[in-house]
Structures are given as C-alpha cells and as structure tokens.
Image 1 (spheres, rainbow, N blue to C red):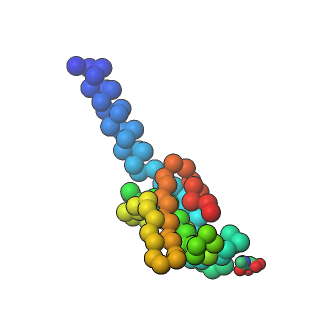
Image 2 (cartoon, rainbow, N blue to C red):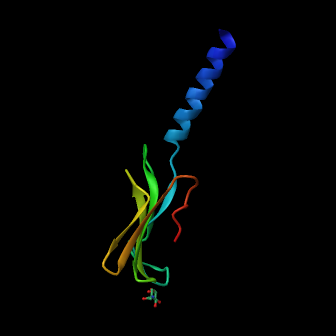
Image 3 (cartoon, rainbow, N blue to C red):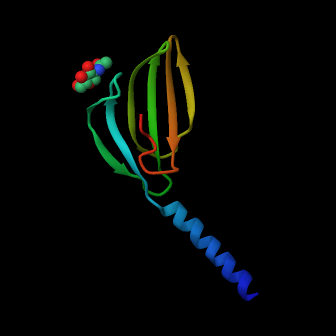
Length: 100
Ligand SMILES: *[C@@H]1O[C@H](CO)[C@@H](O)[C@H](O)[C@H]1NC(C)=O
C-alpha cells in the first residue's frame, strides 16, 4: 500500500495547489477601441475558482470597447443583440492571459 498511498497523496496535493494558485489578471473598467485602458486600470488576483476574464463588445465587425478583470463563473460565450456582439473570454492558464 505504501507507494500507492504516497502517489495518491501527492496527486491530491498537486491538484489542491493547482486550484489554490492565484493568477494575476489585468483589470480595466473600459478599454477603448484602440486597446487603451481609459478608466480603472489596475491588476487583480484570482481567489479560489476565479479566472481572468475579458469581455469584448463589437458593433458589426467594429470593436467598440472591452472590460478586463477577475471573476467567478465565467462562461466562454458570445451573444448577439441586433447588430452588437459581446464576447466573453475566460482563461486561467497563465497570469495576464486576459490581455486584449
Ligand atoms: C483611446 O484612448 C487613448 C488615450 O486616451 C486615445 O488616445 C485614443 O484616441 C482612444 N481611442 C479611441 C478609438 O477612442
């Protein structure tokens, strides 16, 4: 039993560490069409199951503005409304992965 138990313990620990590992994300209340953060520029650190997110708002093919931050329950998806489209992007593979 010895080695197998140890392996399981190591596996459990590494999963736990992976979950608890905090990421740094870009945070911005409004990124304008040139990709410049116009207000609320800072960084945030994910807690628990949070991920970095990026929301992008388009009108037709034109990028209008975006948001960046740390968030819970981020579902990667796009939704459409008339001519506008909002893309939700979430990532947790590396720090600052929510770069615009
Ligand atoms: C975005 O913001 C920068 C800095 O304020 C400004 O120079 C640029 O013209 C803005 N771009 C748009 C498309 O508004």
